[in-house]
Image 1 (spheres, rainbow, N blue to C red):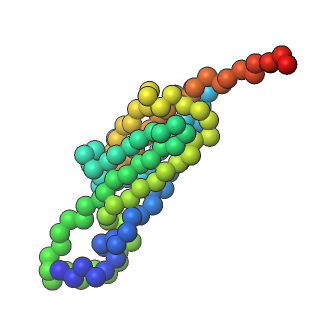
Image 2: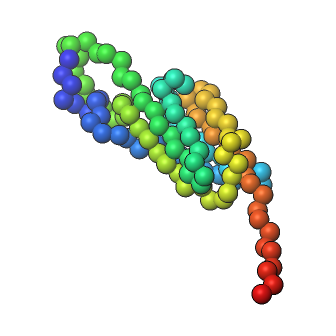
Length: 117
């Protein structure tokens, strides 16, 4: 099979995400069809979420001619700076029907404390 076509990425692809905020949490969603849980790594570090993974292309017959190659195959990653402070140790991720949902509870806002000089 000819591997010089766009089916095979030479670098990391970028992941499209939706980031939402409710009163209780920050929610990140991404369509990652074709990725298995074992091929995903999701981490939260202070105010940043990083999602890494890989889509594996199925082998084609050697005689196959590719007419369109619009899907991204290979490694991808995305880091998202969060809009608020979160409880990183309480984050949960769920992969269902090709949609990754990461939910991270918000940390309580610090109140302003006056300091006498």
